Image (tube, rainbow, N blue to C red):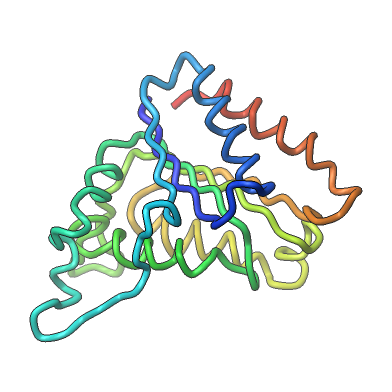
Length: 195
């Protein structure tokens, strides 16, 4: 199994970075994972802005040469892992900008004459590891599970990725947040997960 890890947090001395390290450690110890690539969007200085004009059209985004490296990573991966915080009930703008540009028509999906498009990223599995300041149940009880619906239904399912796992960790700024237990949970998952 080939694993692409997309990390979206600007600080390498943070709890999010600690989660990234546990994901990496678990993957490196997992005999089912042959290769790992890490994409740190902030370190990469990825530009999340969508820019369109008469020479750069949205319908041609799937062949934008500036995004070719990232398309190759997504094509290469069997498993894609996203590590990010939940801010205002959703992923950071940096990650959403990556998604807007990479999950483009004619690369991630193809329009059909039917009700739904054809997902072109079929067969890949996805794991989202996200942290938040608020309680773990906050997205479910207060936001009607908007984060998971956005990621699973509106994005991953749309492009053909059906196997999706979420780790949503709340209370991460609390002394009672059980951070070490949650870090270990992520490590154990990636140490054992098979494609």
